View 1 (cartoon, rainbow, N blue to C red):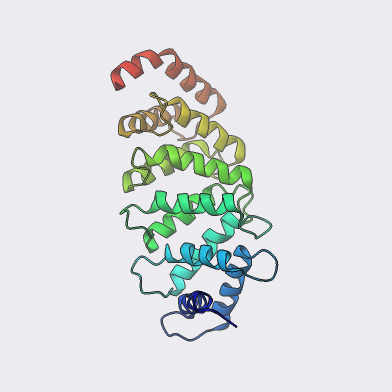
View 2 (cartoon, helix red, strand yellow; view 1 turned 135 degrees about the vertical axis):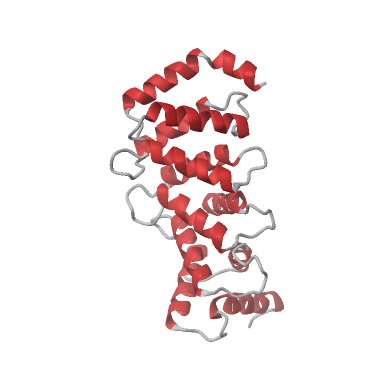
Length: 249
């Protein structure tokens, strides 16, 4: 027998996945089943897990109409799959990281991400899916979370210009195959830290502007940072770090 809380959670979940026509298709039933397995430990979903699931789902419903269209459902499934990892089980740290990532991409700060913001989140996560399996392992997840934190700036929200700059920097580091790999992402993260002149674990507008200009300058005409170019940039920045810090202050 369902108590009132359990019944309300069930009805909320069913309404989300039934869609605008309020009729379950096989795709929607499959998506709901998969989402439940992401949050459940074993075969059953307990009350606490159901509440966590409802909380995450509500963050993909910015207009608060309680239903997902096909595009929203596609974004939700991709984001959940990335964070659930290869075991398809959302652990506490993965849920916390996902909620933090959602807040980074919630550019208007309304507590939920719309379709545009969701697509941006999905695209950035995809950049760090180094082997293309559509899930993030612990290292991939940590790298994308660290990079996003630095680029998101003081307010820890990614505005349009910050997303553009992040993608520009990724392009400079992603090598000749135009696909970011783990060593390249690690080098990129070291560069982000290098330009954090006041060591507050994020880049303000001035620091981010210096980063983008330096990366573009040293990457050259091919817009691709080789190891030599990266070493040269690191050397110059470190040599002038005191001057840069004084100018930034």
